[in-house]
Length: 181
Image (cartoon, rainbow, N blue to C red; front, side, top):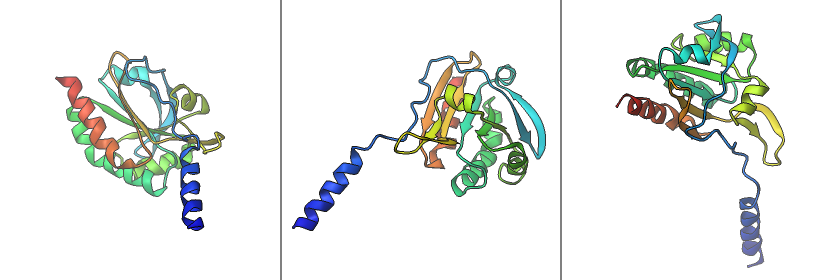
């Protein structure tokens, strides 16, 4: 009986820990501009959010670290859906705190030359409220897995923040398609 009570108390105690989830930018706010070095198909390039928005909405998805299992699977899923995003008029850009050499490889191998990835500086992580924190609140230096759909007016139209990669492509594609209606 005492073991069961201790197990229940331990479970309840973990529920009261502060969540490590980021605050994220809410829908309707103006997205901060980003100008960052990145990679497309293994070649360096400069990403400028304001310039990208001139072509249409942007799916800006933040991921924790290149070449980790979830991030690689998410990149594969975005790569497979790139044509659908393009058909809906949207540009996809992945962002992480990885260095440029890692992104050059990741853009080729995981993104399969289909979309670009760029460096999310500490300032970008902060301005988009996507800095991944440990349960004690300390910064990990990585981003949470958070996807934004940003409209041509530079306003956040959709946000999905969940460390499980599986719904990010489906939900952001739905949001982009809804913008065309």
